Image (tube, rainbow, N blue to C red; front, side):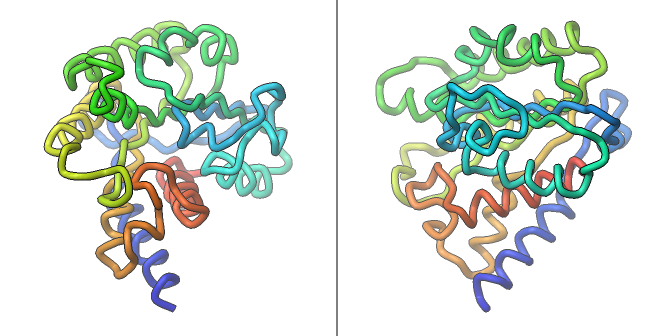
Length: 244
């Protein structure tokens, strides 16, 4: 019962705290799906979630992986069966913002998605802490902003959804991550607001879930990669924010 109450409390709190941005400061409208709309999930291993990269096919369970994109896709395809939607997952484990930029034409722009969701940022700090990358928070911010600007120029009608980078204080996540991770999280929100995107508050969602009584390991054992429950909660919150 504790876990169920935590799930419901966290989901409701995240939905209530979610934000949609527009450059004018007014609330942006949620997504309205049309017949044949394409939804693309982009990011790193959290989005990748073990997908079969040899099967680049919309709505294919093996192509969608086992994470929040698959959870979200299942519900969306079930609830909008008459629309003939196409849901893609192009997350790749280990990716940082520069990695997205390098493959953006093939894995995003060429697909011409109607809805584009991006979750990126944890590797931009994790790889730096491990000594394999030297990008600063400012490099993350500026690179992310440039990627969104490039996308908007090529796909002006695409609705952008930016997901909040998150970590939980357990597993691989220790004090060395802070306060830099908080700076990067703040920059992600600034980039989303500057681009007028929808914003999915994953960090706030998980913080509420832990505060409601579950241990952080329940949602992500290593502090970064969600459990089945974590992915399910992410998908629920994503759908509530996006409106699909």
